[in-house]
Image 1 (cartoon, rainbow, N blue to C red):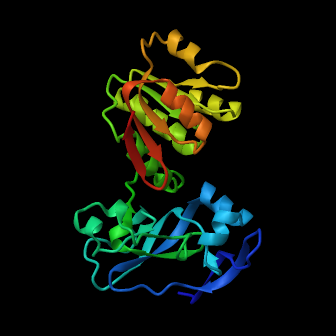
Image 2: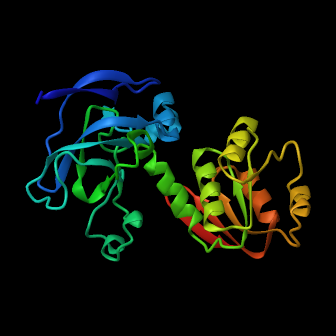
Image 3: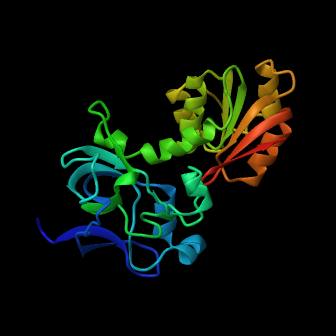
Length: 275
């Protein structure tokens, strides 16, 4: 095997990203080395590219970016027993410790020492990636590499959507980005009665309507309260999934939920609240 690889690197503190030669990562006893086959571009990657205020405060220079990927295991550490060379995989991009109170309780996603590949440590926009075996997600044959590369945002959508029991409930999703659309599709699949998704981007709303039986709403063009009446909802929605990060959207969601309704707020982890 060669000792170097191509990688996309944030190597300058300004907008852009650069192709460079980097050493192939050396793995530890509990790691695997993955040859990357496919990657996806996250909104986080765009923040890094643009070098906005968040990126300036967060991203170390230099850094190999990217955290949504699929590939094949080409090397396993000496302590790894349940994985093998040649297996296809994706992976969880949040690198956790094992000694915090949260991790010891099994709440790994809440570990305060979490670090992200492609954000805090070298990531997947490269020919090879080092990843702890604990983070590897094996791909069955029926899941192709392209689909495997978007398991990360799908996991975010599933985790947020399943914060509450959705069966028979009326669900409002604010934000028709990829994760919002995925969450709306999950809600429909689980058995929600009505699923409405809002956004001000009609292209995204049209895509949402193509993916699942979802009622798309542009609040700049029609009243959400009129949609509540159209669907025959007596008081409003039972559950809200806030995926937009927009204060106006959250305010609108709260005003259209039943008394005692529930909201899951998507960030890096889902936060559930009652209203």
